[in-house]
Image (cartoon, rainbow, N blue to C red; front, side, top):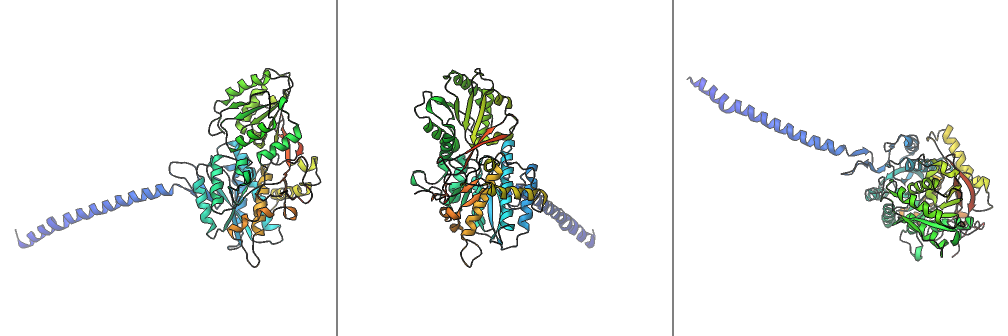
Length: 515
């Protein structure tokens, strides 16, 4: 073999061919490695739902704080979410503070979604009013949506994110809403207020989710626009004249913060009753049906076994179980006897509930409850103090503007369940606290100063809410707040009956809580 051929053979056999193979293997390995990392990266990115919102490991829920036009997959929220986004986008950078409306946006319950939609609409109208109809007061209000999950299981994730927003350009200064009085929401409020973040509860009514119980304030910086269960029960008693010998108590066992405190309040009203209270045990998630319908069928027999003087049933439970109980009462054996079911504000969820047997309400059965608000309260039962038709008219005009002007569209709105009204008032109170806390010569309040404003919300500094005057005591609870008594109708709506008052009469003109 010639020297040239030997060299060629050595070059091709020893260097070039193996080298090409090695390079090919290296390139292939690099591509495979890159593909693995790309797949992992894509899988990680898939956890994101929208800016500020993602799916935690092991969950399909999109939780967190949405800062853009994200409707959490619910088309019925789309119009109002887009309206909020338009309002937020028009705000100049550096001109605003943020308020988070915390509700279970990923809920799959149609009843809960109606509540969420209406509260969201009310909060947006209060945001729009604050930014357009307040004579240029500052700062402007940016509204963001905080979702702790359908049952609040991811409250920790939402709270951590909200805390970070207090220290960023978001300038978060309050959290409003919260939703139902559940154990998870109780933990969320405890964590938020423990980190110095002011909270304005819209529909929370549980006594143990309030300050001032036993003289203690476990939630510093918490204010509420709704009365406690105890105040609702007192208002209901002043209206219905409930007596021990004529009422039977049916209650959720073991209960949650709302049902437990409602049970305790009702039990105090009929102390000495000759009838043993009747318990039922619902699923842990009280939006589920469970087997409680069977229990209610049995309880209706006991209802019919009471003396004919007994005409009132006090119900301490959530709306799903209330609906089951009403349906069971519709088929009770003693159709010749009249009964009135009295319960708390959870009954407002049944206003548009398709599974409620409306025919039951035609069989000598009425269901009356303490609503958080009602559109007819100030026109059909006007009071000299405690609220006015004019205050409610401001919201009515905003709603009209949203239907035909630059504020809308916000989607189909309803007022009779009270949720839009109470959502509006909660954000009104948050805006009031934020702007009152702005020091002279500054544009924004310190986070800790906002919650310090709640004890001053009284007298001439009260908030004239659409649901009634909001005059807060030193613990952040509304004093002698108007409580509309509302009745479910067979036609599928609700009918206003009368305004009741925890103190038995409207507050004085000064609206100053006693010491």
